[in-house]
Length: 45
Image (tube, rainbow, N blue to C red; front, side, top):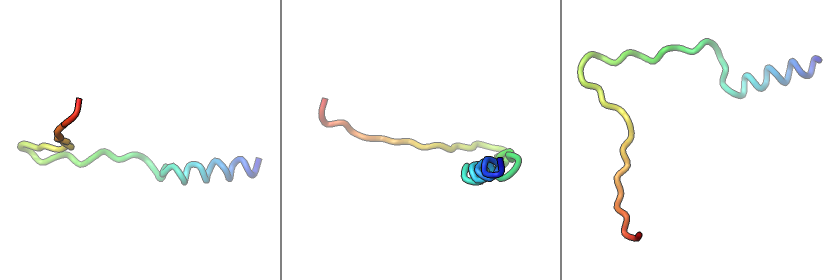
């Protein structure tokens, strides 16, 4: 049982569970654009 508790704590620490989740910052008023765009050219069918 002691080893099971230790394994549980190590698994939680490894997955990054370090506390309550926090909300992302609110963007400033106005136009906000974020993301990722990939543009390419295909030369063969």
